[in-house]
Image 1 (cartoon, rainbow, N blue to C red):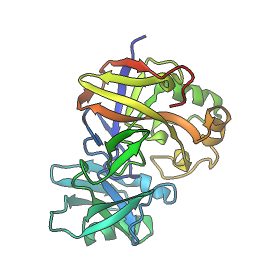
Image 2 (cartoon, rainbow, N blue to C red; image 1 turned 90 degrees about the vertical axis):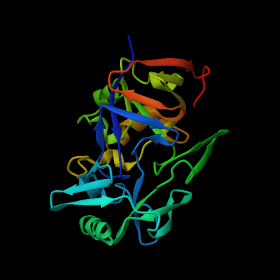
Image 3 (spheres, helix red, strand yellow; image 1 turned 30 degrees about the vertical axis):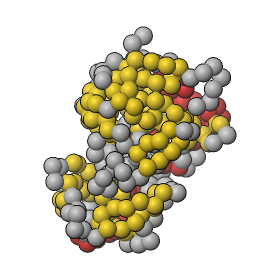
Image 4 (tube, one colour; image 1 turned 45 degrees about the horizontal axis):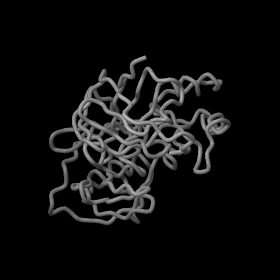
Length: 274
């Protein structure tokens, strides 16, 4: 059966509501406009839905000049890319501390009132150099995503998980970038390198899942604090966590579109846990 790119997703502000796309440009640091913005507390530490699930209800659209932020409780807010003269700050995402530009007091107040925490919105103007990373001998650059530039999932694996759950969950709980149809359940574990159009990606590590998978991405509510993680742990637990999806690096950049064919160029060595 042919493997098809079924949907594409970006998250312009890390941990806010995502956007579905019909096409996108894959850059060395990930999809264009993906996680270039970040919300941090007053100490510069990143915050996410893990602690503040209400963040899922903040919607974002990308404009030529920056962002438009939307929430049901107040008027929309247009935020422009900070200029090079904007206040520069150091912010921390997991173990990485990187430079960013502050987006100003108006955005900070707007977001702080919704989340219920004094916080700031910051922007990464130069993802090609701001956050150099290493993994298993691979050198790459990254935006504000957790650890890797791209997350690949398959519909078949979600279907298999949902057959085991009392209340099925949608794919948006796992916040992927690329969703593939036509595969067998968990077949993505065996992929090492794939081609989509002119782009090529290396699948380098299974993605360890966290409590964000329990957050309803439309309401910000948590219907069940245990699921889907408890069920997933019964058959997808590895030494580094409970796995769903594959983290990927962009080896060749280019445009990809929904409906593109996904070609497997290389498989993981037999028995390997990538």
